[in-house]
Length: 142
Image 1 (cartoon, rainbow, N blue to C red):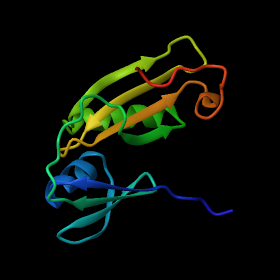
Image 2: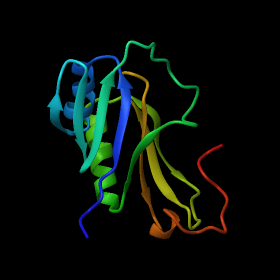
Image 3: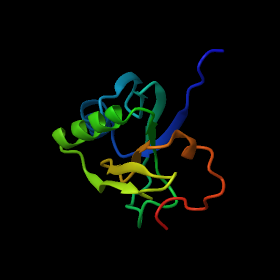
Image 4: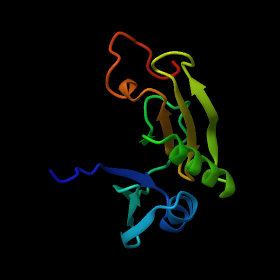
């Protein structure tokens, strides 16, 4: 079976700042682009940034809307964290451990792009916590 890719379209204010954050900052490969849209390769998944004339406003917290990646190797999570710091990307939430000492334990940090889109990057200590562990009810930090 061929791999299935995830696609996400999201609003931005302009293409140059989008490319600065996602390509230069996060290391996304840039695909097709025009004055109103750009396709970005985020670890093999397709992001499409679309310029909007609607006012973009900061959220009041990470819920309900954010997107990101779950790394299956802690070293990869740490490498992106290091890159984000070296590129002076805007941290919305600093790196931390959630639910330490439980089957749900994971490392996480949030970035904010120049248009208030929030991105979360996670590494689960126990891979079963990604889709399993139904006896636990904790989700996020609410």
